[in-house]
Image 1 (cartoon, one colour):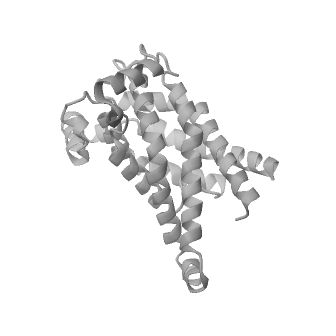
Image 2: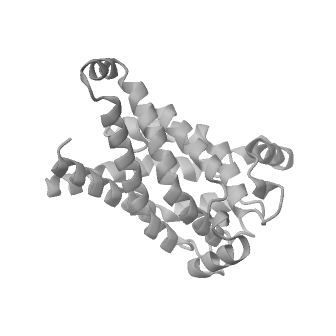
Length: 257
């Protein structure tokens, strides 16, 4: 990939990610409140539906950029060299999955802190994003901003594997939306665990980040439906987001090139 094309793809990916996150933010808020331990209405219901949006806006572009840079560099490394390149051609799906997984691990270094602040603000709309950031740092330090990192990486990696390529791929809009919806549904329990871990009170059992234990607790208290709480808005977010992402990405990229 030439430098100009790489930069264009990088910027287009970041802009497309921002468009999706900001346009469909209300769906994300509803999903978070449905998954919260306190319940939908106690977490804010339909009030303050844009609570936490500054955190999403700040983290969206660098998150998408970090993923894309890592993804492309990993693909390039795995596919370089004569014999290696020939083998990589036949193992393209595996190469894409490995590159996507590493991309998610790096991107989550940016995504998780913004996600923690965003979700805590969504579940407590009376507080501002800035105040929630200060409270988290004061009570838990920087480590508090990375609570739920493991569950987030696991969720995103399985999501990419389920689709067989990157989270936002250059596939047809219909296939992309369908694949995204299926992946979103399958990984919803991990998303529920991630939300519970991020919102849990510091020092609690849930806050320790034990994913199986959190999932068992959700199943015991809310049953099977609790494990898939927020699946409808989540699937809608990903399906509609696929169309928005593809359109924005192609528009920005073609303009820059």
